[in-house]
Length: 345
Image (tube, rainbow, N blue to C red; front, side, top):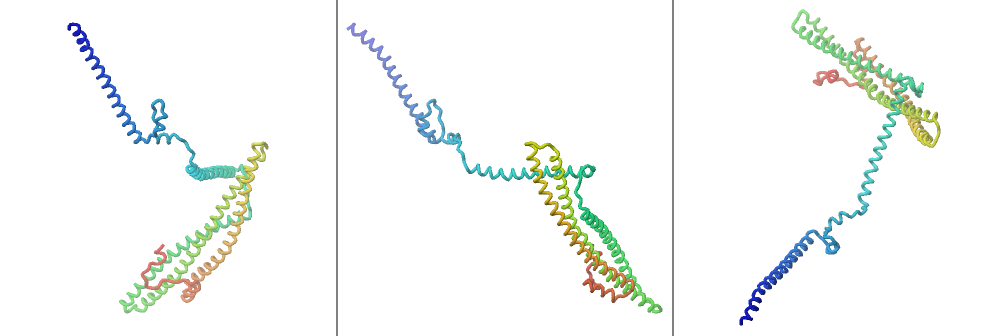
């Protein structure tokens, strides 16, 4: 009996330890399995959200997970669309840059040519006959402008005189009615002043027509020709600038570096020479037609001006009205409320 008790006691003492060990091992295994299940569920959930392929997950040996979108972003594949668009945007930019470069070079050469001409160091191409015609035109333009200014002054002064004559005629007419003893004298003066006022308005119509015609000739026809002359002068400066540049290159040495520059300068010089010759011919033709038109216009206007002035100061009312009809000039209707041509200016 006493021999059995130690064994039972020993077994009783060892059983709790074994039970505890079994419980401990069992609980740890269950916990690890549970954590592994939770990890697998989270991993599957994360893979579904991040679109991670099973093959890529299996290929990661060191725990690095590569997501689908990031992997696509890392790939560099040539796409034809954007490349073509980039070329399309590049070509206009390069063309504009080339135009700016050519404009800068041309401006520099022309400025250098102008400065050298003013300083007396550079040579310039001169067409003596054409330059003489241009100078005459410029001088005539200044004189025509002065004639227009004087005619406007004459018209303004005549208008003031016509207004005074009309008022004086009205005053004489009023006095002729109130002064019986001087009725005839005041009446004659009233009719004279009214007649002078009427003739003055007719003369104003002729002067107005003369001013408008000459002003149109100066401001439109001659000015249009002056624009062409300005373009011709710019073409001449460009031609001389590139001619001087070519002459300087020809005086220098000829080697592999300078020969291409000489050929390029020769090409540019030829282009600007053709432009200069074309502009010179255009200006010559323009001046010829302008001269014919100017003579025709001024002939008619000078005849009108002289005939109207002579008829007015001669007191020939019929001849004055006939002159205006000859040039198809319409006068303002007497008593009309519209302002005169001087008031409108």
